[in-house]
Image: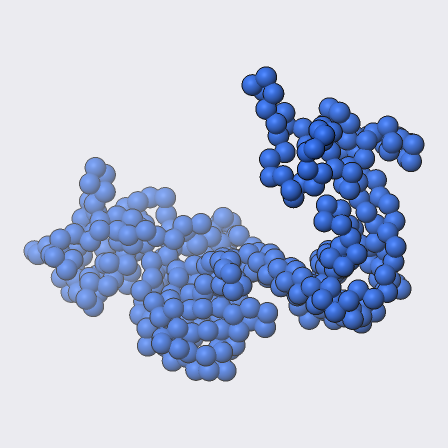
Length: 397
């Protein structure tokens, strides 16, 4: 038996625990009850509608008919099947023209002239309802059918609710509890959903353990037959940007803007910033008093070093600054090749290049320019193949 009153009491709990609007649950219940009623007591061509009363737990059943006339429906010819299910083709060809009118079915259609006798002001395409006899006993099979439909619709509504909730958080940092670690994949629990962080999206050398609360950047929300998949990253350059936005009100408010980020997660990053207010120091806004802001961000990303560079519309000035902490003596720009040749003092050459070429490599990513560094006498070509560094995509707002 289908206990309508018990279902009514469950609505508030479902909305609170699963965040599914009551209207969605009510719609699922009404459709399930209509299907159950039609299965046991209705006719196959009927349109049955159920109205569930939240106050009393009672259900009113009605048959719905659509208002038609000869312009929108054609009457069956003598000997023609009376049911739509007995005839797959509802269009007929006459004089090489296709008749696209629906075939009249007395179970779901009513002629306009008859409908006007029942309800004034009725028009073509309107619906008119007729009450059906209330049934106390829906039967075991009907109840099971209703239950299955309700469960299915609640799952669909829950999935829609989750997609809507997390799609709004895409591109933001979310925090959850590490559920398990399996074959290098980290699964993070967010109460109503589970996020997945592949090994390539994890900071190299970072130790993650089960039960740990962790922050991650939500870069994608995907729907699948099994639910929704939250794709997470701690190596994404935007993760660094969002961490600074959490620590710096100037960045969160748009006064200070992060123009580009070049990152080698777990090792070192470079970030170019500018201020939209001449009275606000962009670097100071990121560093914070006594370095508290940048230290907080660094601790979140396992001590990754961060170089904060002042962005400039002057390319020579910006490229020179990008090689910090090295000091640039001279710079020559080749606009056609998008290449910058930079001269530094001999004792600054290794600092400009960095360990394994990291400093100049990050500078190239940050600025989008190929960078050639030379000392007093020697030109160092930085690349695995001893060629110039090619810039890769930088993160831009």
